[in-house]
Length: 370
Ligand code: NAP
Ligand code: FE
Image 1 (cartoon, rainbow, N blue to C red):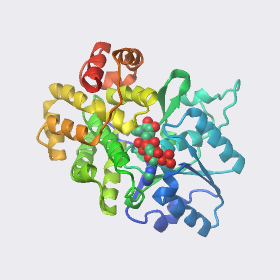
Image 2 (cartoon, rainbow, N blue to C red; image 1 turned 180 degrees about the vertical axis):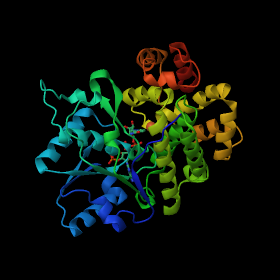
Image 3 (cartoon, helix red, strand yellow; image 1 turned 30 degrees about the vertical axis):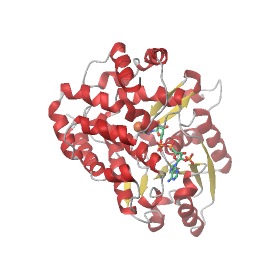
């Protein structure tokens, strides 16, 4: 038996926002949750505010979402949204603003108060009373697939790591996929984020929780990304190709919404937290070794994903990752040993297709990073 659930409406293509005002406006007062530059640089913020103005919808732009957003930053944004009286949220940006918007939706509807029956950390228990505000998503990177997942990954400085909360209540109502918003992404950000999407597709495909539905979607996502690899190598994409890459990333979100991720992600988080390595690059540094280990358990799946990617061997994938993820950060054995004390406790360990021990995690880190 298996289930498939992903309730977000997808509208893909050029001018998706401008031509679908009725799908964008899902309330009477909007708060726009975005980063300091992504909304403006992508052009998405301009399109959204034009549609809201034309339809006389008051809005507040909250553009102080950090990269790898901290939980405190989402509480702050929710305070602004509550004071403004927002009844719906428009998330614009990469995974950071799109994930943050999900927490903002919860905290706007449920003010976290110390000592009350809903404190800030209770978001992880899902113990809030009021439904989160409804949200729409406009991704400006083609990577995380946050627009189609029930996950929000927040930085918790209290535990020196990132931690996700998950709830079917925080699926976006609608997501708008328009390659105009990613066509001018700096090449290295485009590469990092596309690698994140590849990780979602491959981690989902090799995951113990994979289903016929998630596998079907994963292979299509890998086919879409595989047919656009030149862009990741050389840059200069067309808007059309960018919409395709967005679609590939959204398919990755649809996959992990069913399966979750694996140790590639849980082991990637310390690289981001302690070494400031962007999320997609952090995962990409570990992916090659992970797929080599997964291959031993399920070689027939390797054949299927290599065909989808139009590649001949796992070496080809490892070579591509080396080429597009230049990283000169130095690591030590002490750091690796320290990180694995936490990473081995992640629930992602149990869904890998091979047995994972702390020693194996140390070996993977060493092979990939030293
Ligand atoms: P990001 O942190 O959202 O953005 C990276 C950088 O790209 C930021 O400086 C951002 O600017 C900039 N940027 C975004 N769009 C741009 C555009 N169109 N043009 C120019 N610059 C642009 O990166 P991301 O990789 O998309 O998201 C990573 C986050 O998503 C992590 O926190 C990760 O844990 C999370 N994630 C979530 C899921 C999920 O299922 N929910 C899955 C995987 C990852 P600003 O500073 O202005 O934003
Ligand atoms: Fe990811």
